[in-house]
Image (tube, rainbow over all chains, first blue to last red; front, top):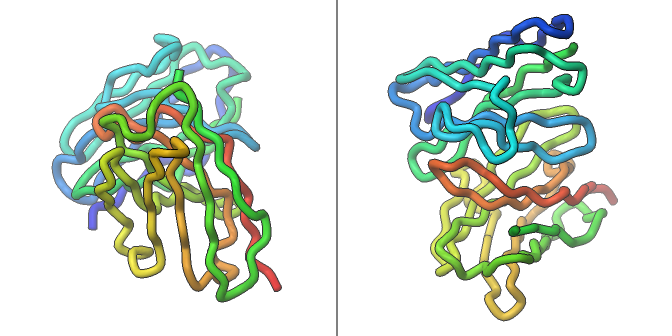
Length: 106
Length: 118
């Protein structure tokens, strides 16, 4: 079973700084890696699909990259509204699995 | 613009069966799409439960497969989730979502809170 491990578990940064969130797959070639943002009381919101494709209406401050087992979500020019939990997700072996999340505080 | 809305009981007794439905608006459930159910226990991460294709094929999380059934109802333009033998560990917010596989889960319902308690 392929698992996703996110790091760090939490992160506190100032407005204007850059956040770098990591997601590592336990098996090679994580397929279709996506990133989500979740704020309290709301469902997750798709940010990035297929490693680096921004979803509709997602600002270009959000960028996804990576390959193989190591993936990164970079958020530049942090704003207070970016405070949330960020999850990575992979589609592999006919199922979806999620990382445990990174809590970002601005 | 596709929108999803979950509905179902907020409270289920231990050992009973949970039944939830997800109404699809702005599109057809029988389209060439996969429709997923996920859940999130209080303060925890996301767990994918399973999915159904608009034509009826299904995939399930192996850890829940023995207790879960997901199906499509074209006449009502909705899909549903049944989970048998509910326990306190199944207490969670249950979400329905459209699963584009390579495109991620791009549309989500608002979530349905389910508590398992006698």
